[in-house]
Length: 126
Image (cartoon, rainbow, N blue to C red; front, side, top):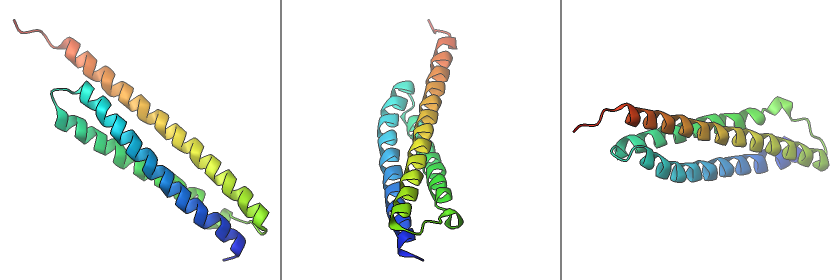
């Protein structure tokens, strides 16, 4: 493997994994707070949903990260070309992480809407 390709593979792998872990932890922390307000009577359900979302986030984003690093698509020869490829791959990854974040927000919105609807539909005992 040429040195210029190492300028792409190693930094990309480190940055991609670091970003994915940081974002997953951040989303998990804030998602847990949100889900506990949606399911105040069921903290175990809130925790379970949060963990399932985090696992899905890791699988999707690490999968995307690896697909963006396909060896056959890296043809950089000079260090300048390698850095250009690195920047392009990281930009694509950041866009995909942003889309995943918006998808998570949408899931949280749907979960909350469903929980509010279920609470509204429950007859009051009196």
